[in-house]
Length: 316
Ligand SMILES: [Zn+2]
Image 1 (cartoon, helix red, strand yellow):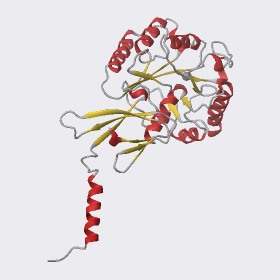
Image 2 (image 1 turned 120 degrees about the vertical axis):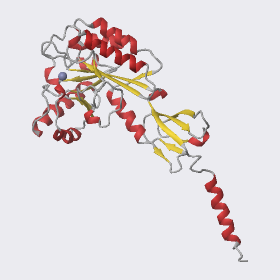
Image 3 (image 1 turned 90 degrees about the vertical axis):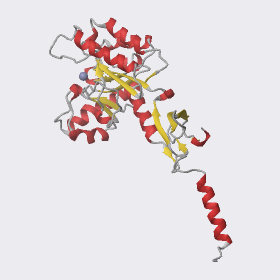
Image 4 (image 1 turned 90 degrees about the horizontal axis):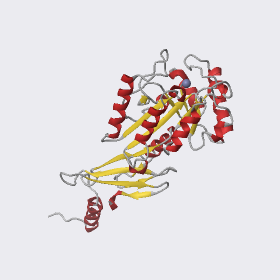
């Protein structure tokens, strides 16, 4: 009979034992992102153009403790119907200000020189007026072309919203082509009388809100619009804000807060054995881990991974 060297035997036992701590079956965990606070529903409110009616809209948002993102055209400031430059640091306090072009010109077909002025100058002025770093935009008229995306990145723009309503609650797959869920209140008819509420469109919008409030999985409800549309619709605006505010099951974020959150989640480092998570970002990240081996009823745990923290899944 062949003798086994004792040192090799010991080494084999040691290796087997150390691997025995975690088998593929033990690591049969699913890791899912949750929104801030461990919630599964998130709400973004995004308004364009910076008309004087923004003051009334922000009054309502503040009343319901909601925050929005306001896409502003600095070249229009102080002209009839628009807000003034001094409003940026006061009226919009607590909300996000973001680019919408200097002159509100569609970006499709613009030369790089014009694009750099439209967005770069818009961004520079908003930053000067707000004292904040401005990192996003909404496309004027929803107009862009693929060629302009690289220039936008070069101008420090990290997200840009389109006007292509999805009537769904998905996350953006490309921040520079961020499609919203819906325009408030339904499809906008730029050639029609926007003062009058289209009841068919309103019913569609209300149904979408119902669906969001009853959603089961992760749901981002991204609503956009313009305060100049609400001249005869303020009670409807308030009704909507009332429905989605002061709820423990919804987190309300600005556009850029959502960008930072999704980036922080995607930047999580997970160890090869799926037992240790490291959050290198400055943002609190919430995840749900589910042990898929726990029998017929999977066992789930919600974890908060604080900025800079290393967290062991094996403790849960
Ligand atoms: Zn606009």
